[in-house]
Length: 148
Image (cartoon, rainbow, N blue to C red; front, side, top):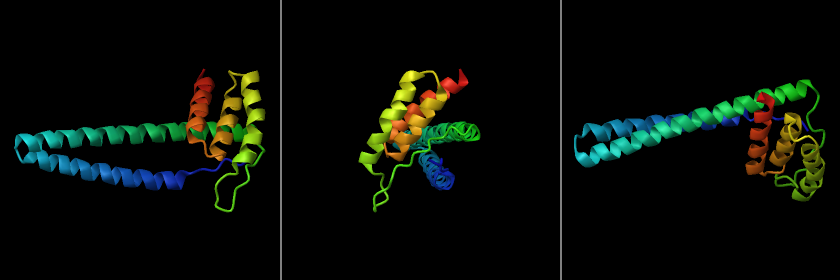
């Protein structure tokens, strides 16, 4: 299974989110500049939302970069999953085929729970099957074990 890099899609989404954060920040300043108590309150609330959005954007990119580096490391070691989850005509993964792959990768994790490579491969298979929540959890575990 080749690890695909969603860099351009993520970059476009980040650019759009950054633009949104800037626009919200400008509105926050405009509301605060009114000098009215309600305007100031709305402006402060918008500023807080803009700061939270910027922080989440930075954290998400940091996570993505760390996962990308870890994936490149695994590719250099020739340890990426060789299995491919077939796609339906709609482009979505075939769930039944993906479910057939999970026992193998889950068994690897159970056999070596501290091996980041096993966790990373499990995350890749989850991602290929469209289970983003479990894929992210497995990738976070892989990152934690790779650091340790």
